[in-house]
Amino acid sequence: MHLAFTPEQEAFRAEARGWLEAHVPAEPLPSLDTREGFERHREWEHTLNDGGWAMVPWPVEFGGRGASLFEWLVFEEEYYRAGAPGRVNQNGIFLLGPTIMEYGTDAQKARYLPKMASSEEVWAQGWSEPNAGSDMAAIQATARVEGDHYVLCGQKTWASRGAYADWLFGLFRTDPDSQRHRGLTFILVPLDAPGVTVRPIEQLDGEAGFAEVFLDDARVPRENRLGDENQGWSVAMATAGFERGLMLRSPARFQNTARKLVELYRETVASGEPVDPVLRDAVVRAWMDAEAYTLNTYQTVSRLLEGGKIGAEASLNKIFWSELDVRMHETALELLGARAELLPDAPAAQGVGSWLDGFLFALAGPIYAGTNEIQRNVIAERILGLPRR
Image 1 (cartoon, rainbow, N blue to C red):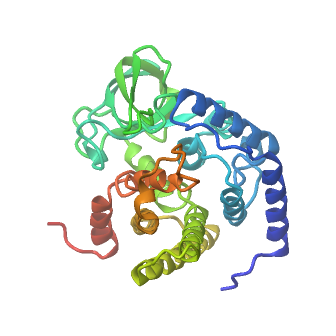
Image 2 (cartoon, one colour):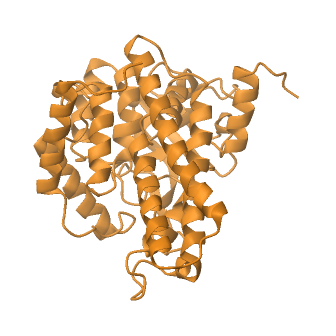
Image 3 (tube, rainbow, N blue to C red):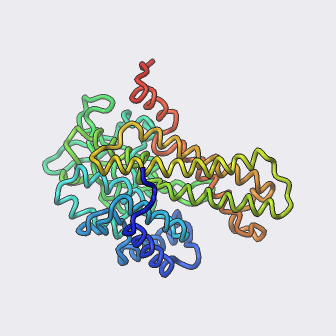
């Protein structure tokens, strides 16, 4: 394997770095889990789109740049290096967008992808229900056919970005006699449709990062179906593959955290604070693991470019990056000692409060995108071939 970038890829990197240095906001934007922050992040997405950087690997006609997946990874490295804002439409551009490209009609691609790339339309993820969390096959929300429409009934909860989003994608049971993963259909739902009620869910910090969505005879056109009727499970598994395996969590995210952790360790040592050798080893391990995840991702991209697909091994990826994220933040908090309890806006935080914020978010990693317990079951059954108990 040749691990050097081509001259063309380095030129792409230089172009991306120059544009980001000129356009990334000088001050951090407000939290995207507030109304003001959400709209400020949407404005940033508009800026990215105007510059041609909203979703670099997408075809130009859909709002992309026509770049390769390798160039996307290069862009992600520069994006995190520049400290650019979080992507408010990540459910759309990283999860639903690639799914539409695989399963959508030409009309659906033309209708949804350009507005997704620009974040004119921001998407919420509507998987979970009160009795169907990581076990998506237990979905009970229904969609019955009436003429040219589906009539939706039920409830979705923990809808990521749901408090302020424009659209929701999710699974609905279209065959009332079906069980488990059969009889489900993947449907795109406008959140301003009659019969749709959105109730924000406040997090521990009081911000609305999620929502519960109630559907009371909400009517959506049948053309909003993605893929075949009653075959939504296959479509959703493709989306889950993007979520667990490649697009949602690029390696640059963890490389950036590992770099900051090394800097924190060096600052702690330089300050004269005694540092447990165990923490030194944990910092080294974090850097190594972030690099290992990067190399594995490049290997995955190479396989995809040769015609391969992301399969059950996406569950391995998901466990690795989610638990790596927790370990890195735990190590940082141990290095910080008492300062680890400071929030970002505390006068004495002096820039270290972001570690506490990052730690609290990292704790969600082993839960979202399918709990790691479920992912270990997937690995046991589909990769190791172990019998089901």
